[in-house]
Length: 273
Image 1 (cartoon, rainbow, N blue to C red):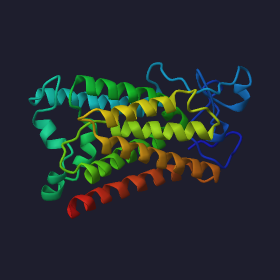
Image 2: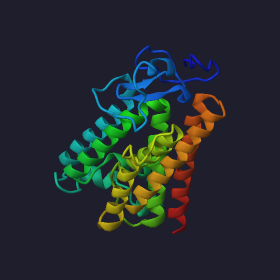
Image 3: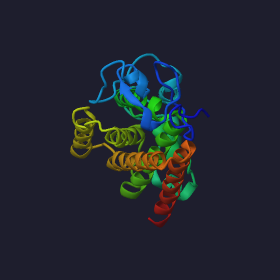
């Protein structure tokens, strides 16, 4: 893996969008056209209010694109297996949704991951995919693909653990746990760079989404809260690794360890219910 051109001992998967030199998190400056190194950032006004996302899929957001594609393909599979466009159902849904008794009695542990790639209707998947696309385009170029994927799955598993802890008998699907994890990590990342999380829109988005979570029935409180807390924890892990000048890959290892811990904790919770 490449090392930062200003800090040769620090590995990184991110390059300046202008000169293509590898840059570590401390050297990344968010701009409307992607992350830039300190030298290139001086050429234009520094952006401090947030990171804008968008644009076509590229090597910097390939994991985001693949994750969304998997969700879309499985949603089509749900429809083909007997589901309906406006609500959950079908054979695929029954086999892959998160449901505590299936884990407790049938040892179907895979449901703690597969649930996050299914959706209960067109509106459900449309909102989640848009949310992941926006946050993915913000985070994946900044974190690097390896860390981004580790963050995504750690948040998904933390959401599954919270669901099994708080709502063990509910049938749950959706990528919103992972999406809330991305939001939590984005808040940590923004604050570490001195970006105002209220002016950038991250904090208002979190507040609005949690209001919907707690005020409207049928929304998985456990999935949203668990995923968000998981994202905050992973963001803190990444920050600690970077500030202590530790190898880049250790951030992903830390996120993976958190995901494994959440997975095991979910199984334990279901078994003791």
